[in-house]
Length: 144
Image (cartoon, rainbow, N blue to C red; front, side):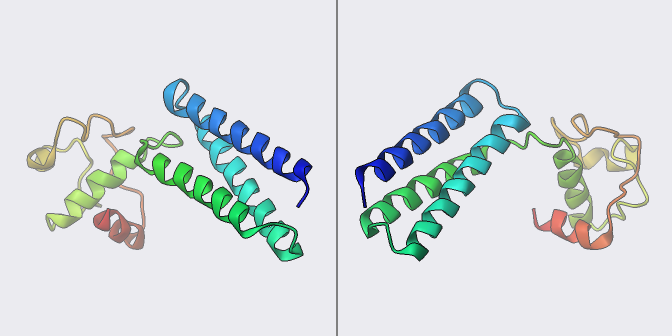
């Protein structure tokens, strides 16, 4: 493979890393999250296209794929930035685990006081509204 392709991949990886660092350490917003994951997905797609064409060496494939997955794995632990419904999901799962009908009580209900913590229901967006999620979704919240 020629030197120009290596240089382009290297510059693209640097761009992804800069977006990632900006996202994690400075501007933890949905835009940073979007750009980081979009760019790593594009890089993975480009790598796969080069693999299909047979114009890329195995060493470069492994290097690029490793970088992509390391970036994605590191960002797994970052709190969700796209929605604050996350806290509602957690509380719904906690209520279900305690065999309480989450459709019957709102998050700030006195009946659920024994389930409240320093985050829940304080960080739930609308603590006075009962859950609106379907039972199958509730099962997923329970697992979380």
